[in-house]
Image (cartoon, rainbow, N blue to C red; front, side):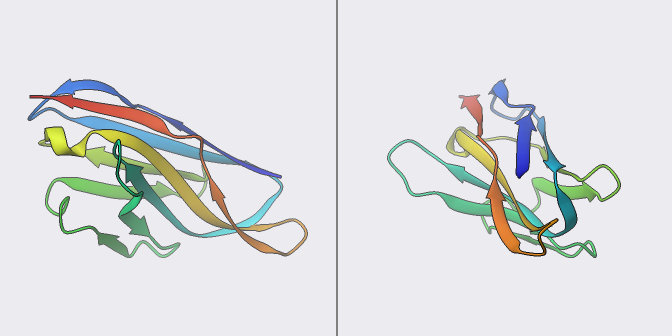
Length: 120
């Protein structure tokens, strides 16, 4: 079984910064894409950023130039550095990973979510 545990959320004023972390653990053979999504109250979950195992990245237009996704493959951890935060960035942030478990099966795993609140 694979677990993803997020940390780093909190309350910050507009213009501030936060860094989210997400560590994977369990019976893991390999990890492919890792990413972050978010869900604001009353809205659908949306993709924020993705990073491949090789380090290629992709971002939602709304966060380009402000957010940076990175990963440490040795630590099985993905990060999201969020700068110049805006009130519309408020939501629950979820990490996800495409993981090959010890049974050889590929599954998408999700974390439990961490709250990010940006005050104006």
